[in-house]
Amino acid sequence: MFKNATLSSIESDRTMSNPERTFLAVKPDGVQRGLVNEVLRRFEQRGYKLIGLKMLIFYCCLINIFVGCDYPSSCSFKSLFENDAVDKFSSNARDERTLVVVKPDGVQRGLIHQVLRRFEQRGFKLVSLKMLMANDDLLNKHYAEHVGKGFFPSLKAYMSSGPVVAMVWEGRDVVKAARNMLGATRPLESAPGTLRGDFCIDVGRNLVHGSDSVESAKREIALWFKPEELCKWEQSTHSWIYES
Image 1: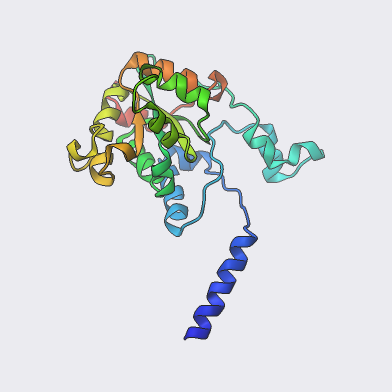
Image 2: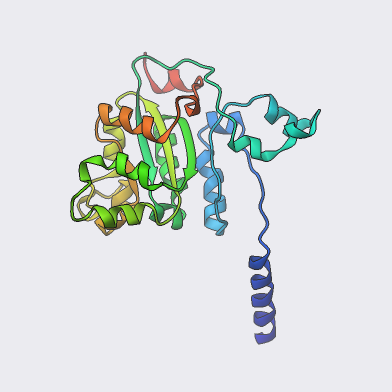
């Protein structure tokens, strides 16, 4: 038994010193059916580390990658994370957009899929998604109202301590709905069933950020995303979620 355990440990250490990477794409049917969270869940629960994440519209370079390339420069996976999304479809004029950011503790704890699942199941449309390290300039602008306050240095240190996942959701009254789904800023004051109520205890590790108003959402989305990164697409379930 001990020999097997030792061999297993050595194999694990050797594997960790030479990690592999793989590429996955959730295809349009998976996005339309609200299964992005399910793909992430399988990998987060298995313990694999997410190192890149992005939402985009399928374009010619992607087709070359999947079915064959006609010239070398068109076959690089790197282009997936450098090419801008195509603004192809229109959005419903009555819909709002909001910014949701899974903070470093949420990423480290493998809870990205939990955030995605709540919004996909509710029927909101994912407009953009990416993984990044929040730099000093971005955090100063995002938390401009807190600059100079006593807690700001620790807040900034926390938000820059690891990767975050930023996402934009679209739908009717999505700003207010998102705030209700996230729960109170202080997790111990959050109701069970909310993200913070289910997964958080300490206000300094409260998992996720959500815009607090339509105006704030517009400002924050502009800070975190370029206009061309916002994917406009027709949600096939729209008429089953909204009466009109």
